[in-house]
Length: 205
Image (cartoon, rainbow, N blue to C red):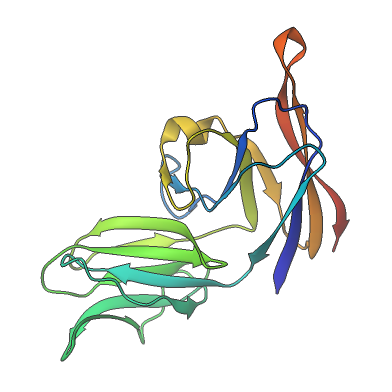
C-alpha cells in the first residue's frame, strides 16, 4: 500500500526555501548520516506538492570496481548478499534471513573488496551505506515516520551532515495513515519571523 501525501505551503516564507524529507535508519547509531530522500523546491504560497510514500522498498549494491547492481524489490526480514558468480559480482537474495524480521541486511560475501548498500523508496535513494568489508553487513530498519524541514543547498540523493539533520526536528508519524496533508506554517521576516512548522491534517486512516 502507498501512502498519498500533499505538502501545502501556508507559511510566510520569504526566501523560497527548499523542504527536505528523509528517514532515519534506526538500526544504526543515532548519529548515522541520512540521505535527502526528497527535496521540494519553488513551492509558492498556498501551492501544494503531492508525493507518495510506498511501504515497500528496493535494495541495490555496488562493488569496489565501480560496478552497481540493479535494484530489487525487498521486504523486512531479508538478507541480501553481494557474491561472485561466473559473470562477476552480483547481489542475490540469501537463503538465510536477516537477524531481525524488522530489518533488511546487505552482506558482503566477496573474498576481497568493500561494497556499498543502498535502499530506495519510490524510486529515490533513501539510505546509503559504504565501505562494507568482506564478511560484514549493513543493517537497515525504518519506522513508518518521516522527518521534514527547511534546508538550503541540498540536492535529492545527497548525504546530509549531522549539523543539518540536528536542525530538523519535525517528525511525522505515518502509522495507519492512508492519505493526509502536511501543512507548512511559520516563516516571515524581521522580529515577527517564527520557525517553520509542519503538521498533519485531513488524515484518512
